[in-house]
Length: 81
Image (cartoon, rainbow, N blue to C red; front, side, top):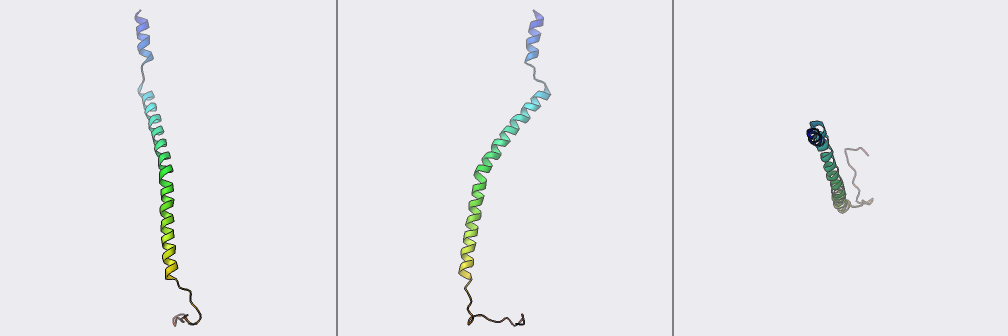
């Protein structure tokens, strides 16, 4: 009878190697979920922010640049011609 009770206790034993592996699997699973959420949320926001910056810079450049005509073009004396 004692042999059967020892056997049941040994089946439930989890050693340090197996518990370390379980912890690694759990942390890896949680990290993959976190990175997936980050990719789903962050990259579209990043693209939206870059789009707004490009749009505002393009508008400012368009307002500042005025097409030159032959009458309004000036010759830079430092360039020679």
